[in-house]
Length: 332
Image 1 (cartoon, rainbow, N blue to C red):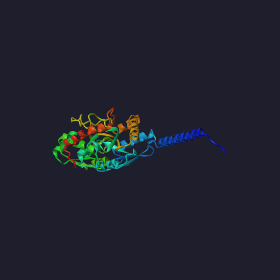
Image 2: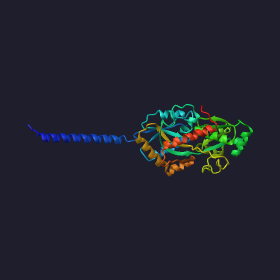
Image 3: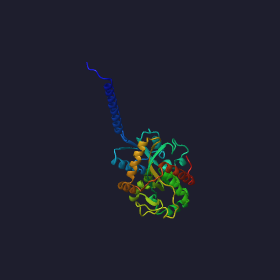
Image 4: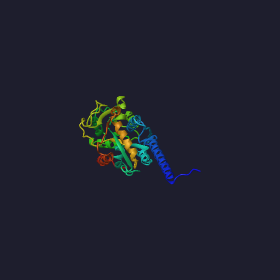
């Protein structure tokens, strides 16, 4: 019969415990590595229709990140009610890092001035991850009307007060159009649309007199001679429309608010996923191929330096609210 000395037995037990601990730690580390973010596809809610400026921006960003990482994105277009439908779904999603969406001047800057009540708080119910770009908007008219400039539009509107109508498909365009109408001193009937493409199709058929839309969806219609661009709502001309004067060049006051857009998620997202996404977006935003696509869409990359995205959004809120109120927009 084999016997063990107490000291030897104790040493064997200690060695066995160490081996078990090492095994457990190794297993935990392997499990943690296997589950490193992102370990599954990320849902990307776009609160506007396919083909819209926001949709194009989301796809450019998602594709750029996916090419350089292990991430994959599932774009989910959820348009309706000036982005309220999709945004409601976004803020109600699990805060696990696997659902993100678009945040923008429409959704998080001007919405409080347009709606008496919203099913979410436009600041507190979001995790603001990283900005992407600034949109440029275009004022266009129906070709049949024969307007060649903003002055032509203004003269026609003043000759027939209230007879002209204008289209918009998001909150940013609604505010910009209202500001512009007030600055021009004209009266016109606002007509909301679910998607910019629909508004431009109606504009080309002279069902509305003019429209304010983002450049990404507008330029193809202009180049196809289906609509007439009157001005770029900016301080300078766009490389995409070199023959179209800016609002300032047309002798009109500049519109001072920023039509920004970025990526966000529901509140309380894990810091690991926020940090990963922020780093990937920053890398993507600096790539030449992304910058070229931005330019084609009439976008300028937006980088905030040391300012947090959350602070930027909070600072933009009163600017858009004041612009909407001064333009005479009443919350519905």
